[in-house]
Length: 295
Image (cartoon, rainbow, N blue to C red; front, side, top):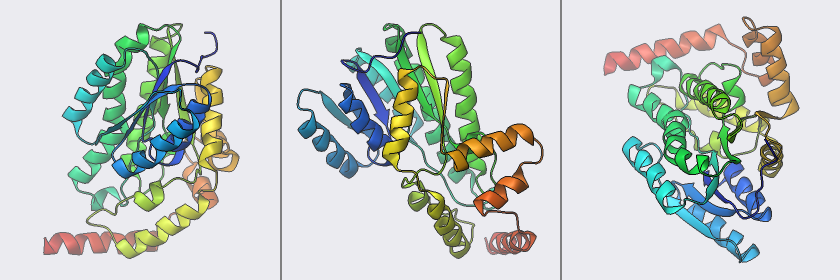
């Protein structure tokens, strides 16, 4: 396919109120894209959209407050965006969430919300907007997965499941739409976003222990969102099927998984400072059993 043309097209961006989504919004505006910005936080959109309008008064910028954890509302949103913005040529599925805790500590409701936002919403919005994208040959879809869509980390079962899922979705869709609509799957590594700070703790987990993990993970998130956004937009322009962001936090783990597909966990854990500790695991299991006994 020819390079993607940003200027004059309309881009729908989810999770546009902060982090990579916010940086993508500024980068797309700089390239001449009109914008439909989706986020669940109205206050964040109220900060980002005026900044874009002030810098690019000739662009149309619309904001949509939406909770992508509501399945029926998300399906309706995809159809509404297609009807109201038939000029859309780029969909960026960037919004994501997580939850802290091992599977035994999670409720099914906590697990389902992560799957709804990170996986089902991507499918629903893409499905809703696909007729519009197909009507404009040369359109493009971006799906933001994660390095956890390449290797599976403990304590992140819902997130890993969703991110592996959207990776498969994007790759299959790319093959299905070859020559008509481009598809890029993105695997960010340690990008300095709000996800660590915003991640809630599962009802059944040890909040103190998780806060320690959260602080450690936050210290690994060092790549500026603007750098990540530029890498993504370069990949879109060049129709790359996959974009890895971060050498130590994405490219190196990717190589390790390729080299050690059945035994990469220990090596990646050492690099990330999350090596499995059986004593911690025993303590967490006892805590979970005690809590279930009280319930």
